[in-house]
Every structure is written in C-alpha cells, then in structure tokens.
Length: 260
Image 1 (spheres, rainbow, N blue to C red):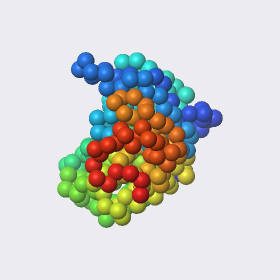
Image 2 (image 1 turned 120 degrees about the vertical axis):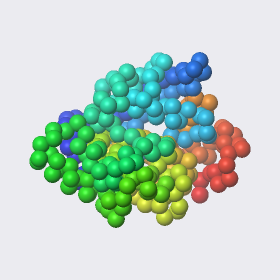
Image 3 (image 1 turned 90 degrees about the vertical axis):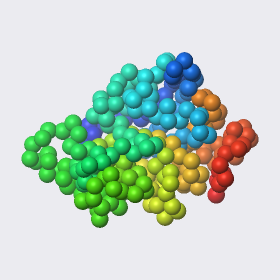
Image 4 (image 1 turned 90 degrees about the horizontal axis):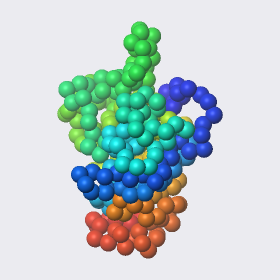
C-alpha cells in the first residue's frame, strides 16, 4: 500500500497546507495570535515549543476540532478554515492525537479496518481492498502480531503506533501527528522516525508536533517554533534550535532538552 496513492490525481498546489495569520480565542483567552506556517508537498514540517505554547490548539484548528477566531487554513488549494474534521478526513487530511483515541473494545485490526473503509462504498470488493490495506498498514506499523488484541489492552507505546496506523489507513495527502514519539524508548523512536521518513518518500506531507529533539533533526525539512501563541522562529531545524531566542524560551524546560 502506498499512502496517498488513491487520492484524486491532479496538479498539486505549491503548499499542501497553508496557515495564514491564524488566531484562536478560547474562554476569553487568546491562545494563538497571527500564526502562519506552510507544509510543502512531500515534506515534513515540525512544530516546536514549550508546553502551553499553543501547539495542540493549532493542530486542533487545522484538523477541524476547533474554530479559528480569524485567519485561514488552506489544504490542497482549498480554504478549509470552517470545515469540520469529518469533511477534512474525507478530503485527505488525517491526524493523530496527543492522547490516542482508539476504539478500545475493538481489536487492533478492526480499528485500522474502520479507518480503511472510512467514506468508502460498503461493497464486497471495497471491503476486500480495505482488508488488504489493513493488513499492509499493520505490517508497516509493526502491529501484525497485535492485530487480534483489544486496543484498550495495548501498552502506551503500541497505542501511539495504532493511532498512527489508523491515520495511515485513511490514505492521506497530509498527515498531522501530535507528539507521536512521546513516552517511547530509543528503539521505538527510531522505528517511528523511519516510518515518517518512508511516508515522506511516498509523497505524504506531514506536520508533526514533537519534543524529541534528535528525532526532529532526523525528520524535519522545516521547523516552526511557537512561543506564547505566536511564531518565534521558523526555518531549517538546526538553525531554529540554535537560535538564542528559542533557547531563552526553553529555559526551565525539562532535562534532556536540546539537540543530540
């Protein structure tokens, strides 16, 4: 299965995802103010910043879970600022969550199969195709041996991998991942890095929220650093991480911060 292969083929826009001057107010508090970023076709943009910077809020606005107060989100050349998540998913924008949300009483296989059949005809042929796609995604995600386990019984690391597998099964043009490596050990981080790089090679555009700095340096084409709801710095990841203002913003960050 090649992720993104079954989406309607046409000339792609210069930016697969374009956020322009985006602001979001929640409960009277301005969480995001004038945020702009770009995800280019077949590239990985990583969103950085300390806790409370507004990263997850931005991802929720992009994914249609929250409404922006002002500004625009353009996906695949279409203004999708006011569209709900269900419409965005059908159009080819998939996401994972900081706290995975599996169908806990269903098997791992069924979780991915449901995603693979999302928005598609329930014909026998389609279901057979979805079943094959499910097996392929589980193999790529390293979950084949866990396919018949209940999702609610998976350890945290495998839950994160399942969340990513479900998003992959949607066959996205753009994949938004919220801290996919949180709580993983070094081997699991390396496996996730390789999976994201393979998706990029297949043409999937990726926006990733991540705190694991050596992984950021391994996958990111571009880094965007959020601080107090605004973009403090953007550019090459090594340059962003070496910036004095960025380092100042991370003073008091947890041990282990910084490129390695």
